[in-house]
Amino acid sequence: MTARGQLAAARRIVVKVGSSSLTSLDGGLDPLRLDALVDALAARRAAGSQVVLVSSGAIAAGLAPLGLSRRPRDLATQQAAAAVGQLLLAQAYAASFARHEQAIGQVLLTADDMIRRANYRNAQRTLERLLGLGVLPVVNENDTVATDEIRVGDNDRLAALVAHLIGADGLVLLSDVDGLYDGDPRLPGSRLIGEVEAPSDLETVRIARPGEGSLGRGGMATKITAAAMAAAAGIPVLLAASEDVTSALDASEVGPKVGTAFQPSGRRMSARRFWLRHAADVRGSLDLDAGAVAAVIGRRRSLLAAGIHGISGDFVAGDVVDLVGPHGVVVARGVVGFDATELPSLIGRRSRDLAPEQRREVVHADDLVPLT
Image (cartoon, rainbow, N blue to C red; front, side, top):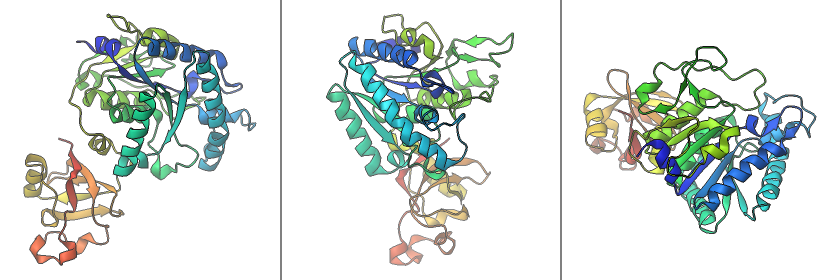
């Protein structure tokens, strides 16, 4: 089945909308845009699909009430704007969905909720229960408390993570552009790419940077990254304009006729490994010898100290690190079990030569994902 056909048939779908699709610099939230989005989501719910909305807009919605003329650059003011705007955004969604007698629930996530086993399982259970109760979850990154060090990075990436977390059958990324172009869509001669069937289809695409007045922190590059993440994990993706949301959520047999569709190119993996593969915060690296690479990649074994001959970075146990092969290529990524200060005296040594309390995996196989 084509990606568009899979999206039409999806029983569980994640839809992401950006700040620029909901707000304006001078007027805060745009009720007409928001109502149009909600109407399309409610129609897809009525057609029998479970829907999760990943919505940006909290910081942008807080600008006007705070008398700010543009998106602040410093983290503290961004968090203040998010604290004000998140409440306004939730109220606006609740009122709009009430027109369809649809209950919603607000779910605010940070990167910790995806990387730490207990946190992501709890997030997964919460979303599953909300969907089971007929509630439409509205997800956003928790900008009020997230620091630069613990950000997911952007809501496009967050949407891909959530889609995998809940086992979604499709992901729709709504933008202010009507799809992916092979060049800057503002320039003549740029061509809309209707289908992306493999990662190689993206090799010749040139991405324009977000405009100077952009309300969000994402852009086309983040959407392509998120789409590639989801497609590589077996989830079909549609990138379309927010004004085409009704067509983008078309559940007829043909499926959506707008935007750019990304065909799934890989198999699903566990939510934890999916996040590890695309971790935003890699704190360091471990240099492996050829034998360790063969064990980690070929036999899916845990990484032991004996197979490491070098380290870099300032990390602590529980951080994500890259595993680098003899030729300088990152071959895997995982959660390290030791602090960077502990490892120098351990690397290259066999487990039987270490103290009993040190005879454990440096990176356990359950916390490791190959990248090759």
